[in-house]
Length: 287
Image (cartoon, rainbow, N blue to C red; front, side, top):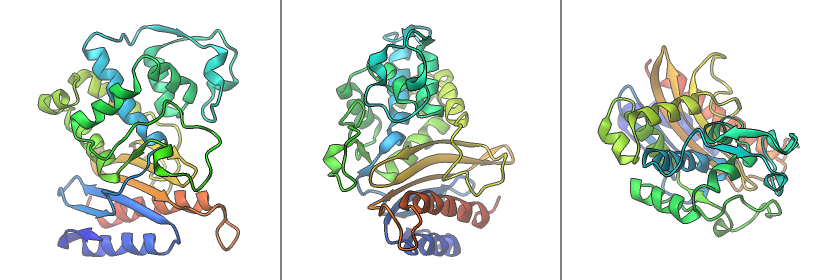
């Protein structure tokens, strides 16, 4: 495990948490108070699942900034949007509902709603989003599908899904955070400080509270996006403490068994492992 010497105890705790499980955990952590980082297999390609949606949101906001898309555009929910969708709420709603592109982005992010994801992604192209990631420095991120196929086997190949790296997702969150005060960071993302403020607030509005926030004090602010994959669970976010950004953590579990030896579902331990990694940072870094 690569680490800075100052974080010996934290790095050791993170290593213990990962080593206690039979599956792979890849992560990148940055202490935002000191800038120090701890990482483990952070450059390895890994299934992104819905953590990819942060980059879809930013690609859409670049198009908004350039005048190619309008956040106020009205989108009608059609029955076709619910086909092959296994997440979110709109798939259970009555077709004919009309929401704005802004609300579709919100649904995509805060409930990981894939009806909303389709609405957003239909206004972009796969090639555009993939090229956007490469252009801002996410060299290990590869968008391959609009919506991943439902029938994937648990041992599917990496080329069957969109993939990313822990470092890429941490870097994307860092750049969105930097853009709150840096016009240069906003320009790197191809958008405005105002739209980056909207992006950060949307990440903070996340409703799903497992993984990174699960072992933190109840009211802790976490700007994050999780993912549910056939091979594991993942989560990338910015954790706040006393009103200020405290640390960034991007953690991706992979090769998670369906059932653990003691009968616990594998996904339960995957989410718990990410929660424990986050708590170790919360306890180990100086507030």
